Length: 449
Image (cartoon, rainbow, N blue to C red; front, side, top):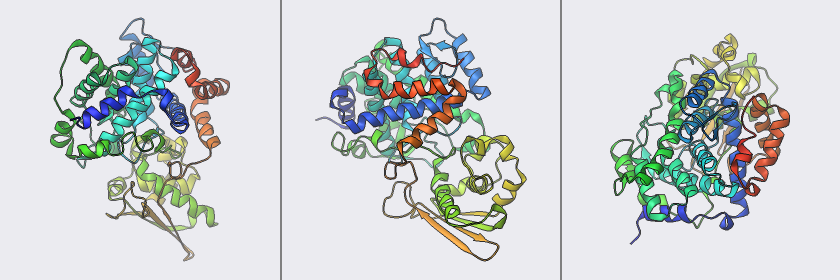
């Protein structure tokens, strides 16, 4: 009798572009564009530019584009560098149903596999959708330990499944790849996020590199455990793993890539419902940041960890609720510029952040549909109290933003690296991704000058 791993492997290996719904195809195209935008913008950070130089110099005659750079590398090194760049600015998409941020873990490895083999756009989309589905489902079935970060934890499996699909591996071999990848899952904590240590950004890069390697190890004859996810996610990285939940509704409900969220605040998702609430309050009231006496935030319990010492740098600011709230009230924006070092050093933002209190409510959960996941009250110096609650963040599949807003986000992220004209070319190419015979036609647009 087929177990959950057989079912996941059969789903992934049998996933065909022709059987995808129009909704799933469009979701895949938009996830590709959004993820590419995050990588291109992040590629400009100094450490990521240096990593790209290293990736290119560490190998010769690499076929894979290092996004944002006039450089190429071998597939594993390209997956490492591109995935690492994609999380540097906290603009990559995700799903609250499980697995954290599947696309940034899956797409870089899938691109590398497709470039190496000269696969077409349809094959890339098949790999992306398969890897996204499996990693999200395994992530959703895991009760992670409190300090285990979602980045990297299931991503190695996601990359490995995508690469296996593009390689055309059958179900038994895909199962082997899943087991090999699970035993290579990075052990990552939240602590670097709060300290602002950028080693945290390498979590998806490691997953991409090791996931690509897992598929190659299967080819080489290496063997994995019979059920590696249950082993890893109940003894090391998690407290429990529900195998039944990993396949509940598999192939019967909408695909996970259709049930994602796109980020419109350049920070950790746990900030987003709070910031959406603050934006709604600001939209209703006529006041400036200097009029604010206090801000009270009630949200998911984890956010209390994101309200400790004032952030030391850009990365830690993205994981700090009081900072994000104060930056929105002072600057009127939460894009990447709101988290630049000069903003983190702002006396006005620092002073207002001290007046933001965060309380955790155990009944609040980002995955719930029946109650808000954040409530914010802003008390003004004139005695007026303004409140707002948010259940789904703007950009979530339950609360989509306009298509043009997503395209404008890409333009904002990509134009600084590619130029506006090239960014528009990429948009057109992503719309026609399934018509491209060789993915290298698409990635040729993504190298920087």
